[in-house]
Length: 175
Length: 185
Image 1 (spheres, rainbow over the protein chains, first blue to last red):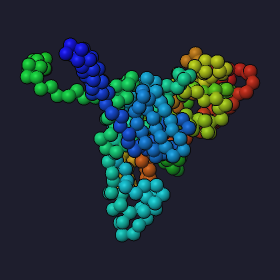
Image 2 (image 1 turned 180 degrees about the horizontal axis):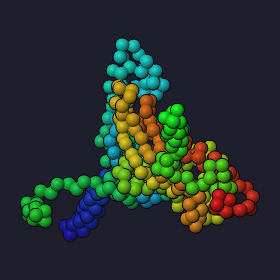
Image 3 (image 1 turned 30 degrees about the vertical axis):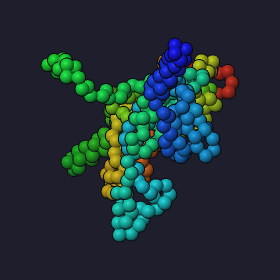
Image 4 (image 1 turned 180 degrees about the vertical axis):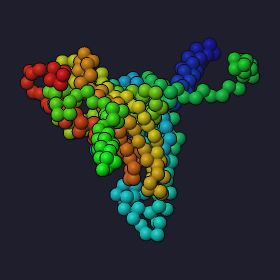
C-alpha cells in the first residue's frame, strides 16, 4: 500500500508540473501575413506566414524563411489599417472602369492589422519591419513576442480589474 | 512725363522685389549648391519624431526606404544603419540625422473617390553631419502621395528625393583625401 502511494505521488507531481507548464506557455500562433518592408533579403509586399516559435519570430514565404530572435527585437507596435480588396495592377486598372465603377470598387476595402518591429542585427545595426495581418492577429503575435523577450514602447492595455477594493483604490487615486 | 517716369521706376522696384528671394522662403541650405563633398560612407540614423505624432509604421518605412534608396541611387560605396559598429572604421563618414517636422495622414479611400483630397504628406528636416557633429548640409524635404498608392508611399517619395540630394552634394571617395567638412566650408 505504501509502495503504491510512493509511486503514485511522484507521478501526480510530475503530471501536475507538466500541465502547469503547458498552461503558462500559450500555443504558437501561425497567421498569414504580408511583409510590407524591412526584412533583409525579402522583397517588399511578400506574402507568407508569420509565427512566434522557440524564442524567435519566423516569417516563412515561398522562397525561404527569415527568423528573428525575439531578444533582438527592441520595439513591437501594433496598428490598424485598411486596403483595397482588389489591389496591384488589376486594382490600378480598375480605376478606369466606366460609369463610376472604379470609384465603387475603391469602396470595397478590407480591414487589417499591422505589426511594426524594430530589431538589431549581429553588427548592432537597427532594422525595421512592417507586416500586415488579418484583423485580430497582431495583438496575439505581440503578446507572444513580449513573452519571449521582445520589448515594446507601447505596452498592451491592462485587463480591467474585477476586484472591488482595487477599483475603489483606483478611484481614490483619480480624485 | 514725370508721372510716367515715376510709374516706370515704381514698376521696376516692385518687379525687382518680387524677383528677389525672400529670406524666409529660401531653403535652409548650408552647403553651396554647386559644391560637392567627398565622402566614403553614410550612416542613416533612425528618424526622430520630434514634436510631431508619427505612427510607428511611417517611422520605420521612412528609415527603411531611405536606406534602400541610398544603397541604390546615392553613390555612396557604403551605407550603414543606425548603431552599426562597422561604421566606426569608415573614413570620411557622413551621418544623416532626420527629424519629422510635419505630418498629415491622408486617406487612400478619399484619394480614390475624390482624386483631389486625402493626400498624405511628410516633411522631414535632414541634417548631414560629419563624425564630430558639424553640419555639412541641412535641408527640409517632403514626401507626398496625392493620387495612387497607399499612405506609406509618401515615405518612398521622401527617400528618393533625399537620395537624389545626397548624390548631388556628395561624391564617392575611394581615396584618402580631405574630409567632407574641409571641402564644403
